[in-house]
Figure 1 (cartoon, rainbow, N blue to C red):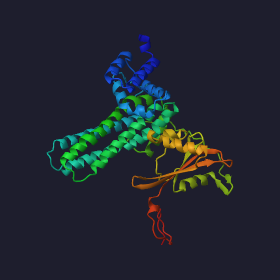
Figure 2 (figure 1 turned 180 degrees about the vertical axis):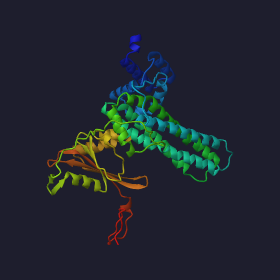
Figure 3 (figure 1 turned 135 degrees about the vertical axis):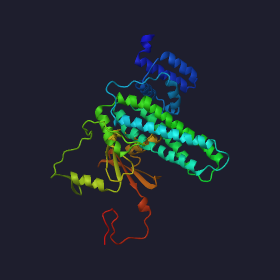
Figure 4 (figure 1 turned 45 degrees about the horizontal axis):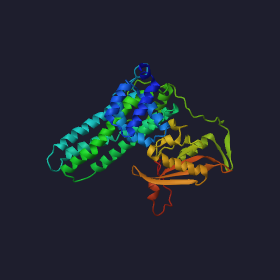
Length: 419
């Protein structure tokens, strides 16, 4: 029996069967005891393999996600931290920065809980503005977690997918969205005015504490599962790629320390060599490669191209992108670039475009004070064969506000105005 218990495949299979039993309504306490007996120790890679197998067998990611916190609780007793062989991470390594951000987030969570304890002890009267201000300030600091999640979802997950690891990232992205939803609800509650102490105490217990607990649970999953698995999987070039593109998203509460020296970056995108004096000929004219680059950069909208195999092949690099993009998404399946809750919409658009049922899909949404217009176009050759999908995103806030007319020259690009 001992040789089976020490076998990786056996451990993964055992965990998978026990988790399936849990999904069928088995007692967590009974499952936990059985797991401790059959699986003495497991690491992050085996938990990832277990989730991958469950999804391969047809278990929906939403179902795994809904039980994720219970899984973590059950597996906590057998999870061991196995760091990859090699030197200690230098300061400034992407994982070192992720961990420092988590430490900072723990500090903010503790600060907010301290304020909540003070509020809980107040009598039935209006809460002093000092306590509310401290609560709101801590909340604003917590919202910096979005930068942490964006880097994780668009940089780290992209690199893991190159190694065939997709299941855990899908589940974790869905849990990230749950945290976002809870924090959004807390922000809406904190925007209220004139509430009594009793009402704020209800907000603290019913809205704030679940958000803080969810954030803590995600920190645990990152520290114990995601980061060890990533360190044992990704190459040094991939860590250098993540480090190089991190500034596009920013840092959460802290900045990276000095010490990490990334390898010389290698761009995975293959750029066609075009001589400086050559142009690409189109039916309506000719453009050099430099002119084409300048044209795409000058367009007042963001472009992203997904090929016929659903892989991201290009995005434009205008100065004011609506949605952040990083080179890590190049070659990535577009379905993996979206949170699980919206993947079904992406799939429907692609299926409709490929079948020829439709050629255009569009959406418009309010986003961080902007009015954003998003359009998708099916790209086809002269014979009607599907080549891919073009996404065009534009901030229409200023255009929607235009009234009357302007007939005189006036510059608004920061480079001066006409006399």
